[in-house]
Image 1 (cartoon, rainbow, N blue to C red):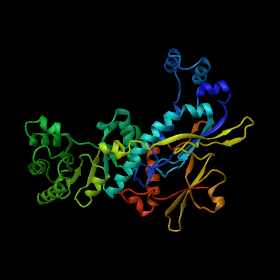
Image 2: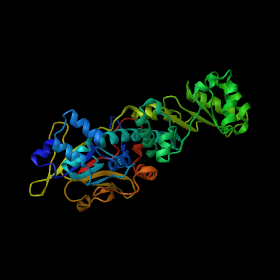
Image 3: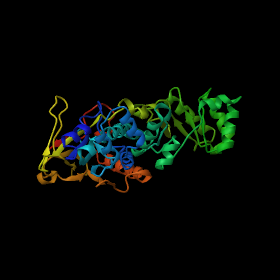
Image 4: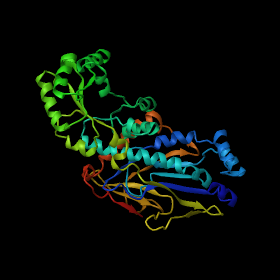
Length: 419
């Protein structure tokens, strides 16, 4: 597209692209924006070096004019969008990219690959955090996805309220607290379970977490308490009927004097399994496979669509698709979340012309400046970006109606209104 647009002379026309999802995954009440910080970090380094240009040249993918254009590629446009961690609804314009056609077009796959993955993970994580109802959730899914996605998933889960991750690289890059426990292999390595527990306690102190379901749970709990004493930090259950086991282990720990020893459960948990454990004496949840695969919705199905371009005279022209089932709304949007007198969100209000306030809607503006004339604005990347996104998510979810907490299938928690 860039090569053809350079030929036609339209490559340098000012254009506006928007990122949005036409619908939420089946049954979901809301989505969560995540990955914005990673997009901005990548945008600052988005370049075509000698290796990339050589490949494109050697394979005959592009002509010399286009290769020369890419060799000098630097994004100099402007980006507005929903703050990371914000809730979104169908058609929410979560990102608006304003630049020349060529500059904006080249970014499409990068932007969508990050936002679709991270928003899917954060949306699933948010439901799990809600189901946990204040009990901590720990991300433990690195072994169920590829190495790059593992780090991204840990970050997205943190945005949505997960308290820690087992992925040390995510901890290093983004300041996320890290936690980990021994696997069954460590117990099987030793001649006895007692020997394995003793080695772990010697290495990490009695506050460590001991995995107690390799053999017999009751025997393991008794051994753990005998070796670590009353300061045993936690025991982990990773198989079987977790509800029943949690009750029996809690009673056993209390009878042995270890009332402060916590119970951590794992084993393919999702939001529904976490909800079923609500009445069990569980202290925290380790979540892996279902989290990093989006709990049944591995993509947010976001698209990147041209909504406005300048004509030959430099005047803005709204453009939109009319394809059956894939229509879009033309024109750069302004959007706010309408808030009622009780501080509850009641609608996502999107205006292509003018602003929602001009026709009487009041609420909270959702789009913030992320990049101005090619310069990434401070506070959205690195560890600071994750912390800000966590806070934004907490506040955004808190203003949703009570239906947002339902795990059963249903319509979006608030409607989307176009003006």
